[in-house]
Image 1: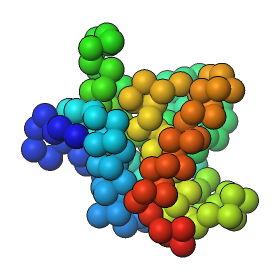
Image 2: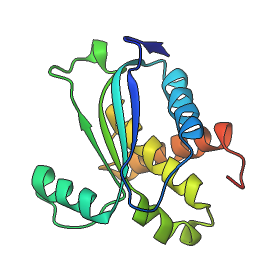
Image 3: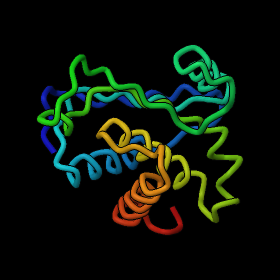
Image 4: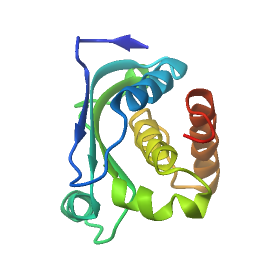
Amino acid sequence: MREAYPNSLSIEQDHPSQTLDEPVLEEVIRHVLAAEDATLVHLSVVLTDHATVRRLNRSYLDHDYHTDVLSFSLRNETSASDSLVVEGEVYVDLDTARERCEEFSATFEREACRYVIHGLLHLLGYDDATESGQETMRRREDEYLQAVLSPSA
């Protein structure tokens, strides 16, 4: 992983009662970027709640429903040569992570980290619009979680 600027990564804890361990989250993010051989220009990760993510989903994507993560690329131009450059924002709904972690036999932290990875993969050009794309992203998420977090994390 290359970092274009000092302090290219920011993590904002914007949830009224839920938080994630920032050093762990930063380790997860940097691991994904290194494994994908990506250059980090700017990444802002916002850990927030149902209302914020739903408002963003409605305002920017015209989807009036809850979702676990939203990612927004801030790149002006996209070409094959810069597909491994990350410049964007990822909004994670920690309420969804808290509500659904047991469903997937995961801890809250692991489920929330999965959402961060998923949003980051979208910024790296992965697409889950098809079943094969979903499988590829799920496999990558599993690989990255296993590489960085213990099963109990």
